[in-house]
Image 1 (spheres, rainbow, N blue to C red):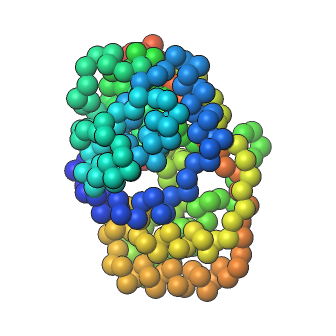
Image 2: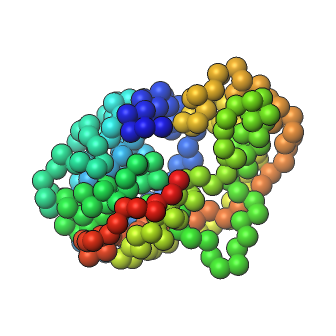
Length: 267
């Protein structure tokens, strides 16, 4: 998808977005808040605020949060939750003055961008304490990652490929890109805010996929997605998966990004 297609896709996804994403637990949000306060952050510009799933809880924890997003549909959902400090804009050209906030924050956004380095450089321009991002950290040494929260999507995408649709393997796309980003532009610090083992029925994940609330599925007719999900339900039955869920809050300052090159960051 090009840069103009992504906002349109999120406009379409917006009505089902919250229902198809697992919310962060209060303990994880508390750790994010504590990590920000440790760096003297009180005001935040959330870049890619989406429906306000993070901005709302941070506001409740005493932060002054301004949100920016390229999708009017997502902004409308955030506004419906009572968030008022909202503006439409692009991550690589923030409509904010130098040093206007304590920090800029990305929550699973950088992997979506054509030029994540430009977004990080803009973030350190506007954030006095730097740029922060919630993302998946590298796997611990020796962890195989045999079971993945993407397992249900992997099965559906395999069925869709058998139907003749051009989709990927459905596994690890965003986490792979986030880990590649950390390797390409190492942050000043990386603090783990979630590390737990989770078990859930695959059928629960299939319910979310059925709503086509993932961008690759928007290119596929709804009826084909429905058939693929039904076939996947028959295949997985009552199977459950256990996987390790880890999130980290990365921080970049101007020092890490000065002179950085944007090349060689792959898909």
